[in-house]
Image: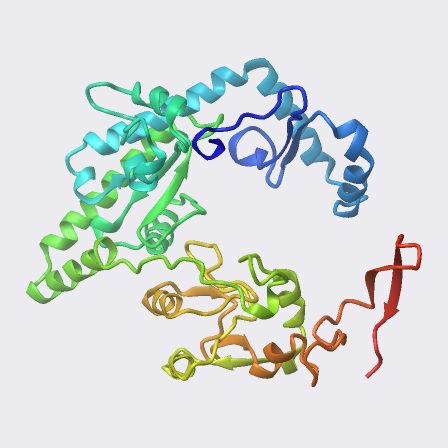
Length: 401
């Protein structure tokens, strides 16, 4: 049956249409902020060229930075002439860094490099390869994983696990790397930091990073040796908090029925919820001091009116229109990060009022066509049918208050 066999696309009909954005300044050669849009679209000239350029010009400046553009052109030329060699070199340096940290006795006591086993579920690794570097086999497992696994790790991205040192990622980034050694990293999690190698990375820069990690490990070794029993217990509790007592990442709950155009499917209209929240009269704040839990226990569906984004890790835990679950509340309370975008501790979580959800847009009558919840929409376009059953477009202007 069709369910038992994987269907392949008809090669005579399939069209390859791939678009990708690349931060060139991070991995290749260009000035800061330099980036590109890569296009491989067999239908580009016939279907989307005009609309693509129109959209691009809408979002770009008429006075571009020509220094950045020139650096992008230099980077393109460099990749064309020696790209394979440079990328291979950056991957080799990343593997060297992994090997040194994994094999050094003092470094591995406080740090670890997260491998494919740690970051990719077993179901998506049919090769069974758990790490891309082995002290006996070298880097050979990477090729096997690349050919058979559904997901692989970018070999030039090195995730350093700091939990064993009792240091959270944000503290390690600022207090240790930046303040002491002027090393800047941008990506952190609760117990890790991310390093990257690129075409500009040299062996001396890798050696410098290894020496810095050694100095930090020696510093930790000295500090821990001077702890009294109470301080040592506090340190062990911090290590346990970062290695064992990790808050489980909650699954997406669901969109509220108000923002689900089709009740039989889980898809939601996040855009409608986002613009509905522009009207402050449709929103209220509930604090995380037990108030919101009491409201949920009483049977009310509490719905987020904002994006709630803790940093790290830097992705939304809640989006506009999403029902707030007890698991999500538990995760937010367990986080020990200082920066949560969209959340104001003095006020609480911004949610929609019950009246707003009952009517869908804050009007007094359910099903009303008012657009009070969408202040940016000046008119509504609706499809209707005339006597000839031919579709036509009619425009209805927004009602005045």
